[in-house]
Structure formats: C-alpha cells, structure tokens
Length: 547
Image 1 (spheres, rainbow, N blue to C red):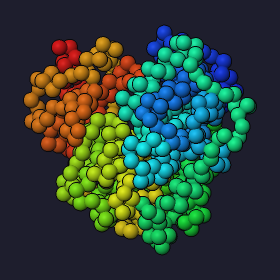
Image 2: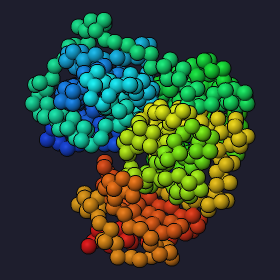
Image 3: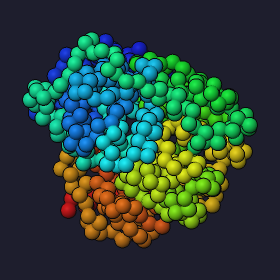
Image 4: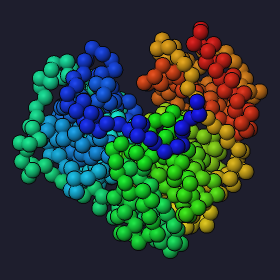
C-alpha cells in the first residue's frame, strides 16, 4: 500500500469533536490501570479522552494537586493560565478555572479569551516575577493546557513554576502522586465552583499577546528585518500563534503574511505525518509539505506547532531545514552578533543534538553544556544568564535578550522563526546557505533517529545501563572516545547510554510511552558511515541488554 504521508488529510482522518468532548466529561479513569493515571512526561500530562487518559477527573485532580503544591512551596502570587487550539484544551481550561477559583487562587487568563502560546506564558511569569526574590510569596507561576504537536484527539496539561520553565521531576512527581490519590478517592478533597456559578469579576485577565509582541525588539533585531524588507510567510499550523503573527506584522511593520490563518480542531487542512496521522510537527517534512510547496513565494517560511514552542524553517534554496542544522546556524549567528551577552555564558544542547553544534561552540571559544533530553535542564542557566542559548534536537530552543537578560525559560518557536529573518536581513544569506558553509568547515552531518522493539524489562535495563556494560572499543572503524550514562554538562542521568567517537556517536534511550527504544545516531562521514554506526549500535545495545 502506498503511504499517504505528506498528502492532504481526508474526511476519515478527522476526529469527531463532539464525541471527543463528550468523552472528556462522561468517561471516568480507572486509577488501577497505569495508562489511565496522571503521568507527567517531559512536557506535562498527555492523553486522550477517548482512551480515558485525559478526562475531567484528571484535570480537576491535577489542578487541585498544583494548588496543594503551591501551598507547600509558599507560592501565593497569581497563576497565569493559557491554552492552545486542541479541542480538549478549552474544556480542560474551564475545569482548571473551577478548581483554581474554588481554592481562592488569583488566576489570570487571556484578556481576549483566546489562545496563549507556551512562550507567551513563560514570558508573562518572568515579567511578573522580575525583581522578586525566590523566597517571595507573591511569585507567579502558570499552567499551559496543551499537548504540543500531538494529534487532534489528544490533550495536555503542563505546570510551569515561578522560574517560568517546565517543572522538574521533584515537582511533577509530587503533583502526579497527589492527583492520582485524589482520583482514587473519588475526587474527595477537590474544591471547585461550577463554571456557570463563577462571578466573572473573580477571574483576572492579562494581555499575553500584547506584552509578548511589544517586547520582541528587546531580543530580535526587528529594525534590521524591516529595513531589509525580508518577506516572511508564517504558518501557525492551526495553532495558538495565529493572532500573534498578525500583531507582529502590524505592530512592527514587517513584510509578513500569515499564509494559513485557519483554526480548526480537526486540523483538516494539514498534510499527514510520516505515520499517516495528523500531527502539527513543524520539523516534519510530511507535516510541512504544503508549506514547503510555497517556498518560492517568500524569503523565509516558518511553521509552529499548536502551542508555538517548536519551530520549522523553510528556505528557497533548501526547503525545510533539519532542526539540528538550524540550531547550529542560530548558535553561530547569535554568539557572533550579541555583543552584550556574557562572555562566559555557555551554549546548551541536549546530548542527542548534532556534533556540528560541538564544533561551532569550539570555534566560538564558548563552553558547551551538554544535558539529558528535556528543556528543563536549561532553565537555571537561562534564568541567571550563565546559559545564553538552550536548544533541543526536536526543534525547540530559546535564548537571552540582546542585553543578556532572560527572555523565556521555555521553548519559543516564534522567537526562532523571527531569528531566521534576522539572519537573512543582517548577513544576506539564508540559514541553509550558512549551514552549508558550516558543513564545509566541520564535516557533513548524517543524522537519524529510529525506533527499535524493546520489552518493558529491556527498557528498564536500558534506562539503567552503566558505561562498563559496553565491551566494544571501536564503533564503525573508529576508537570509542566516551561511553556515557550521565550527561557531561551537569552529571544528570541520561536514562540510557551514549557512545561516541571523533566523528560519530549513537545514543539509546527507552520510550516512555511505547515498547520501543529510541536510537539516535550521527556521523560526520556521510550516510554510509551512519548506516554502519547504526548497525553496530544495535549490536552493542542488544549485547548489553542480553548481559
């Protein structure tokens, strides 16, 4: 059967929105079933009402757990609450409001009662907390209701503490345990006021959009983009950034057009992802196929996922850029064009990001901070300025303002899209043209992530592998230079294993949701060498799991 990846969605691919929302209210999770419990991954709790993994009980209990966590931590300031465009996000937001108001929390929702991108919520938290000490009880925090780029049937719920970024495992573990206890107790202990009975005057508002868009010249050279007349096409992919891009064009007088302003919870306008599912992933060539087809109409085309924490960059000369390639270019440009950034500020990358970033950091004379997967590891450094840029291989990144102070401590897809326009305006080159120059200097990267079957027992073993479990001394004809189970940047466990040589590496990590392990690999010696690395990596992992 021919794959439909990259082709327009058809009627049978679409969700029944009424059925989904009815399931949110009607179905009750069974706390004895692991798949129906509250589980916080790297980006909050996610699931679908249709599988009883994201229902009203989950949100009522999780919100009460967040209220209890705030009390335990002495946080008594406002809580900023935002949502994306997924069908489950509005009912989940209303459920959260019922509990927050029922507990007397000063909740702040969007003044337009519209969508709020994740970076705008992080920006709001940090703006409110600026100048407040960590011990100040009047600190703000926030909740984003979003499953990010996940399919339309999914919902997501993410907590951002006063530092503005994703909560760490200490917080999420506490919140998840408390939420599951509340569900098991039949929601006894959850204090709520029905939405219809809430006095509107008790719900605070905040103009997330105006505050974020007005502040952009503090981090992006908007004047340079305007003077150069860079033609920008922005596709929100039906997500929360749609009105933000409109205001960016108007407020800053840019040659910017929203190429698809449509918002539809079925996402019927999307092209199908690699697995023939609708997924708003701006780094996926299949999901971005319709945007790539327009590449000749603009100097740069950009895409964002549903909560705008991820970015996709499309250029006339290269089409959709590989996220790793764009991160390397962004780092190379920023550290050469931000004179007021601290000279000792590091470049942050996850350990499954490209080796090209290592080479760029070395050429810039900057310290490289290599951390496990998860943007939360960059939060402390972005907050105090010791990390000027933090980026993930999955097209998520953020960086400091032009004066070296913090902008956001969560991923900001809008920011990275605007940076591509700044690069064109200032250098006269597209990011993809600059990347080819980096490859000429440091080697051509061949990079791929594949999934391989693994039992739950094997996944548990893989997550705890020690470096001495690998007997091999060579990988694809090169001496192994490092075997890692802890990230070199902060010593944190990576939940798997990374093996590297001078020109290649692989990393194996268990999936948190499926019976597979993820095998990342890269070679600076081309695709054939990458294939050899992958083949030997599978053998290394299989041997380690067998032992």
